[in-house]
Image (cartoon, rainbow over all chains, first blue to last red; front, side, top):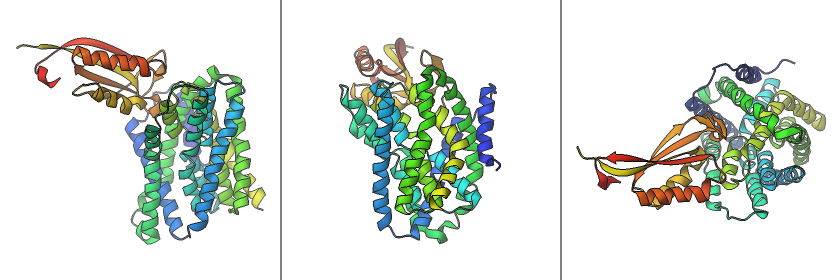
Length: 310
Length: 100
């Protein structure tokens, strides 16, 4: 099967940066694109939620919140074998949390294959960002002195850009419904993939930078970043199957568990766990896990979901 | 033209610290500050400026010596051990000393 063209944009960015091209997107554009993606994902989920009851969504959301906290604990246990406590805790927070862009590429993959998925997956995306960050901070603090500015951290995460736009988009989509969305869909639905392609071009450029820093982190971190996604994906897929999700839903929950954060987590960990070296978690999360999920993981998780739900 | 002598305290650091630093600067008695996005390189590698983890800021504060000292001390004790940060102070002349 041919690669999704949006993934080719990622490879273009990666290749350009590795070849030391002067290609660089202006920071304001990256900001704009990320705002667009978050709103578009939120709206899509909100419109679909409008057609659905909310009682089952609530307990499922609680379940995936617990799941992402659990994944962070497991990641910490493994990382602690080799890393110092702050580095292990901060990196574990990245892996328990989720990546919006990986989710976007996975949903675009499903759309291309003509596979539908449950709207609450967008709600899962929103609620799975935060729990692992809290677990990470607690784990880092258990062994260290110094207090945590919980208020600042909560503000950073709950009122951070991604949370406000994702939940805001969900709410607007929910209130607008399919009829109200008609006027917005030329921008947010039809242009989703072209915008995603530009964003992935930027991701390729940034990933190349973190790939270069990977060598300094050693084999353990690289192996962790490579092996964690498929293992966590299996946990996510089994959970999704247990919830009775469809093939598309199981695949996306597997992808959410496999993905690691590199936008919300780095900023939150930098503030709450300053003694952790951000180069470790970024080299793993952005240098290895993100490209792995994009190129190998997503098709793999789709296969896994099809097998489990067959 | 008469210039009045003041201190210009400059902090170059990671952009994630902006909120906390601005709070500190206000609390320690400065009357104003200026923040710019910054790029550069040093012992913490190259900060390209595009992403939150990759972006620097430069904060300029014109103030009197006591305030500059208090802010610098806060930076030394709270941020310098763990964050990429440089702090320096220079002499400047201002037209309206009551503003600072």
